[in-house]
Each structure stands twice: as structure tokens, then as C-alpha cells.
Image 1 (cartoon, rainbow, N blue to C red):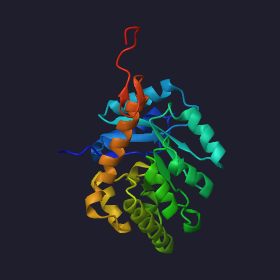
Image 2 (cartoon, rainbow, N blue to C red):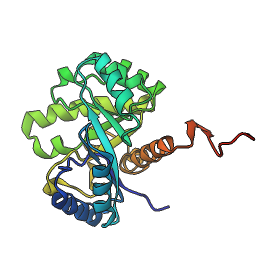
Image 3 (cartoon, one colour):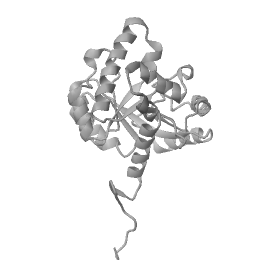
Image 4 (cartoon, one colour):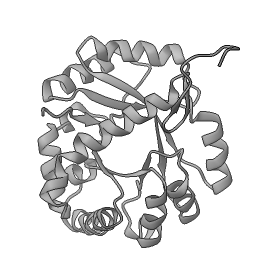
Length: 244
């Protein structure tokens, strides 16, 4: 069966439709059918719909995403209460252990992203992976650092990714490979993105899933949850009325 390829982290300027159109054209040219872009938390629904329409003109489905960068567990919980039903993808940028642990076990979180390159500030360890097993969050790996880092910095970053991806696979935490880029020149084809995962030790069988099955399934699951008839996983409201 033909795969649907996705990149869930295109860092667009949502206020610039011309830039969005260029990204949409390039994404379609490279073979993507689904992409996601982070929006500011105060973005209005109309603005999101307008950007979705720009991508739809090029045959690309755009999912709305929010990147939360909480300083504490309470900040995270407050943001999730306000924003979970506003965006199709919720990612937590994990910059301290308290936030990382809470995000891993909270079923309202879709992606765990560790943006700091210093291994001392990356908290996806065995305890984190075990917590994520009980939730639904996946580990997002942005390939941008692999494209821009050089020398010892790239080697250290690869070492971190090898450890984190090995733990994710051991605990059956989905791995999602995204670009994380804001420049079109850094965009790569889906299969090229998957092959980059060979650098950090991902097994061949899971490479394409990380740019297709895993991200696509995540968005589809959330869109069902955001439908008006959704009650709980496996339970939908079919009809309202006094005769029920």
C-alpha cells in the first residue's frame, strides 16, 4: 500500500501567506501529503483555516500545531487545559526534568521534543520512556541539527539521538522524524529524512514509519477526538434526542 508521508514540524510564519504558499509548493514537490506547522497560542481559528486553504491548493493537508514551552508542571497543566482542543497536534518542548516527566505521562500530549542540544539538558532517559509507554506521546526528532551542526557538536548530538531512539523503541514509544526547519533549502524528501535516521541507529524497519505511519496516525487520531461526536476512545455520540 502506498505510504502517506508527513512532516509535522515546518516552522512557518503564519502571518505570511506568500511564504506559506512557497513552502506548500515545495512540500508537494518533495512528496509530502501532510504537514503541521506551529501556531501562536492566541491564533484565531479563521487564521488557521486560511493557512490550511493555502496548503490545500497544492494538495497538501496542513495540521495545526502548538509548541508548548512551560517552565513548570503547573504551567504545562494550565496550557493543556486551555489549548488541547484548539490544536490538532500538541508538542511539549522539554527543557527541564519536571516538565519532561509530566508531559510523558499526560495523554493530552502528542509529541515530546527535546530542543536543547547539550546532552546534560536532554531528559529522555529510561524513566521518561517508561512514563511515555503509559501515555500516547511520541518522541519527535528534528533533523535540522544534523544538517547544520559540524564536527564534535554533531557527534555529541548523534550520540544523544542513538541513546534516546534506542530507549523509545525498547519501550514501544512511537518515533516521529520531522524537519524542524524554517528555510526551504533545508527541506528534504521523506525517504531522505528516513535515511538520516540510520545515523542514529534506528532499525531499517522503523525508518519509513517515522515519516509516515506514526505522524499520520497521530493526526488522524486527534482529528477524531476533536469531532463533536467524540466521547471517549471507542465511544461516539451518534444521535441526540429524548428517545435514546
